[in-house]
Image (tube, rainbow, N blue to C red; front, top):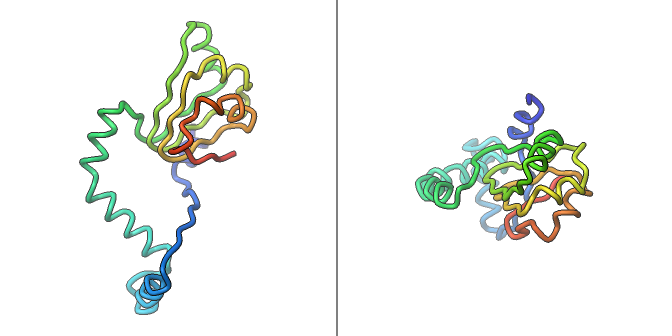
Length: 143
């Protein structure tokens, strides 16, 4: 489990496009010592926006029954689901991890749908087996 907790603490890389004037203003603030670098300013700005909308996020997590944070499934977890004859609808705001030893057929037999607002870490074969069941608009794939 420590490995999973460290994965949750890892950052995900994103790419953004900024207008030259906006970028120049960021560089000016960094140069003036308000922030240590561009990333520091952007992270701070994102955190400030998330803080402003925290109540809306909380309500949506409750309404849409999302797991907030980390959700991880091992081979044993999915085998237990299969034994019960059940299928999962996974809804996560954060990180969904499917273990590297999970066979694609087992994932396909036990996972009905996947919605991840954040990142999905799963073996390539599992992602391929679940391709038609993954809400692609919200999921960032990670091997």
